[in-house]
Length: 271
Image (cartoon, rainbow, N blue to C red; front, side, top):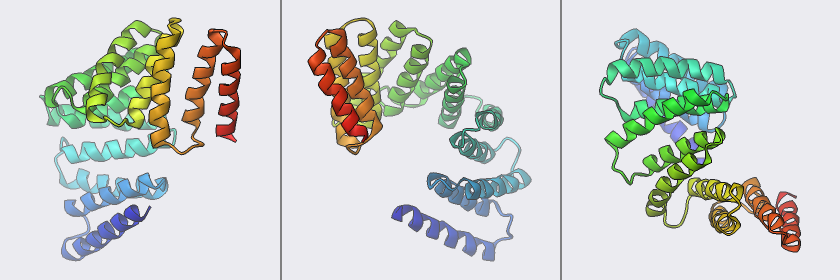
């Protein structure tokens, strides 16, 4: 929180300095308004965040060409606020506007476009429109592969996200292929683990569990638990969720005493 307050102070001061130097509607002022909006969003101050983003958008649209990437970026920021507030329809509306601008501004693609496509895919996944989600996820992943090295962690994120959508469609074998492509990239970039790699381990474990390959399932669930214990506080619900899956595996193996102990530990975590 202290870092956010320092950043807020810095950009507020910069904004006041520029207001004294430029007319209020200068594009440099809009850039500082965007920074302030991002800080407010990360602190959960959505009303203030939207105010800053909306003013930035107004300035950009007045003084920049309609296909300028700063307009697209601001539209994506507004979409993020709506998304975090659960307003998926509104978020998608702004993301589609941003994507249309990016396609004109970057006819050969761009990493910002990959991010926009990924966010669109995430919203479609949330609303259950999985074919649209898969389409936009693939487009995002294709762009990342053009502009990033093959072992970049954003490639792993894209692979894992694509796998998640396939898993939602009950295409576990296809999802598994994407997860296993993502796994060595995560392990290379985060040798001590990362919350995202814990999610990946969990999902791999769940596919093994569904296939009845219990030892493999336990192996990956335990890997997920180890990483989660390193990165989450002791009462975090993800710890309980993974442990409950461990309990279910032991229950499936008819090792009921171990399953019972795991379930008891789950309750202790959540209390």
